Amino acid sequence: MFRFGTMQFHRTGLHGGPLGLGAIERDGIDWALADRINRRIVCDLAAECGFDLAGVARAGEAPDFDRYRDWADRGLAGEMRYLTDHRADVRASLEGVLPGTRSVICVGVLYNGPEPYSTEFSDPERAWIARYAWGDDYHTRIWRMLERLAGLLTAIEPFAWRACVDTAPILERSLARQAGLGWIGKNTCLINQRLGSWFFLGELLTTLELKPDTPPPDRCGSCSRCIDACPTAAIVPSPHGGFELDARRCISYFTIELRSGIPEAHRDAVGANAFGCDICQDVCPWNRKSPRTGVEAGPEWVAPPLERLAALGQAEFRDLFRGTAVSRVKYAGFLRNVAVAMGNSGLGKFREPLERLACSEDAMVAGHARWALGKLKG
Ligand code: B12
Ligand code: SF4
Ligand code: SF4
Image (cartoon, rainbow, N blue to C red):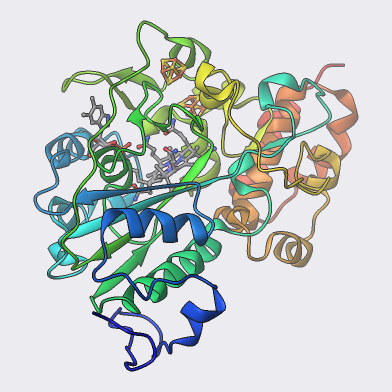
């Protein structure tokens, strides 16, 4: 039996230095009686580390990889090369990410604050930033939580691990489904019966042998609200059954991932979305009663005034969004999005800021501002 008092373990993960016994003692949990790590210990410690959901998936051949490969081959990833280049096939197995992976501890972290949904706001002077992006970047926060979980677990029994939060070429939703965290909805989000879909996913790849969970049933039934509400008709039937996302039509893709211009045919439908899109989750009945974190986002996040966003200088943009998900879109991409949202408002009061953006040195920003000027009334 493992005793804290007599042995000192070292972290065998890929990141960080040695971990002493203090971490376990500081957390005030008496895991001294634990012989070996099992699923229950994993879930209890995951809750202790602040995760709202946790489950275990078996590693091995990725069962949904063919679906992924075909999706990528049919061009539905658009210009997201990290999904289609040499990294695409890495997703077929976890061996390329952590050799010897046997089990994946999948976790979820809720981000649904008390603020209203995007479908509940209609002020044309304001933009919408997707709620997942409000506040500090989730990648760093969840990675630290996973690192802590790994520390607590390796103190019981040494094993190799790697933490992932959108940071490795793996099929996160597919793994989370196998780990019992939820089902994949028609909007392609992972939905949990109790929490809805406003949560991030993270994984701890481990060389541990753990009993896997079972995937829950699909609970979308005959509902099609997300499909009906999607402004760009991006949710389409999949040749493999169910639905898939044509990212080339998705507002989230246009406003976060796309580095070039937003296709003119879709600009009207982008509406007020200046970063990401929440619509297919806002309308989902499983999110109606989803619990709220109680953490309020600052006023700068929830429907910020378009005029203020358009006036941001490059340094101000950097300072305002440093360490947040929004920084991914870069300054020019953000102004492009703001120009489109201003055009979609139709408000004559945006003529002056748009004329300024139309003189931008960045041809993409200037072009989108000119398009937007053509949409203003009066
Ligand atoms: C690329 C990407 C995007 C792209 C493409 C999204 C997409 N639907 O493919 C864009 C930029 C559009 C995007 C948007 C968003 N994203 Co995103 N994104 C990713 C990323 C990096 C890869 C996803 C991917 O591989 N897509 C390709 C498709 C084919 O794969 P898939 O959707 O995962 O589906 C696989 C399985 O789920 C399974 N499957 C799918 N359908 C079915 C059906 C059945 C019956 C079965 C058995 C299996 C199955 O097979 C598929 C292939 O393996 C993941 C992180 C990751 N590494 O997984 C985050 C991730 C999916 N994104 C996330 C978030 C939060 C968002 C947004 C909500 C952000 C926003 N508000 O704007 C939107 C949601 C849009 C939407 N409806 O999906 C979260 C989702 C959390 C959740 N609860 O589901 C993730 C997991 C990041 C994270 N770590 O939290 N995203
Ligand atoms: S994120 Fe927006 S554009 Fe993309 S599928 Fe959902 S509703 Fe459609
Ligand atoms: S809106 Fe309806 S169909 Fe779409 S994901 Fe939610 S339950 Fe499923």
